[in-house]
Amino acid sequence: MKIIALQEGNYIANSQKEFELLTDKTTDSGLKMAIQPFLVITDNDVILLDFGLGFVNNGIPLIYEVLRKNSIEPEQITKILVSHLHKDHIEGIGFFENDKLIQNFPNAKIYIQEREIDFALQQLQNPSYVPEILNELKNLPNVELLNEESGQITDEIFFEVSAGHTKFHQVFWIKADDEIVFYGADDLPQKVYLKIPVAYKTDFDGKRAMESRKKWEQEAKEQNWKVLLYHDMKTPVLEF
Image (cartoon, rainbow, N blue to C red):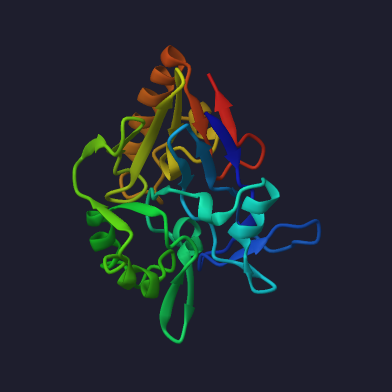
């Protein structure tokens, strides 16, 4: 397998979940984090893990620019695995033109928990969500709605509802070439989350997320996982 961290940059997010690129001149206070979807390439698939932010540079989606810097064309992506529907993980799905969602990856199969969509649609006052995108998801022809607590998408791709950061947040394993890649998304977004056992109040179920991290760390050590950290500014891939 080949793993590529698609680093969109380091950002600061304010209380309204507005993201600003972090620079030496940044003076605003807020939560600092990387935004980096991941690409995992196997013999059978080119897999994108979450969409990133929906920023556009000179009319070109930022996710396109990052992919092309890594010699990947958007059309090469075959599957997209979505952990949850907060804006910094889903906005890169596309953009609106005349009230119509234009997808950035119309030919890729997109895997989303249907219950996560329903949950998100009940949170429309929460600035973490983009209602216009949520309202479109179930109607997209290339979206595959998952409903099980855990399961298998292909012989290589496995998922499980971890239900920590959001009510139906899901995590993924990709197993190929005697390797195991794990993506914990916002239930395990940074390396520091393993060092300090904390039940975060900003999570839907912080205690459950904390307990999951303990379990995953033990399994990662036993099975030599490569752990993908979506928000870590220094360590995108943690190897055990």
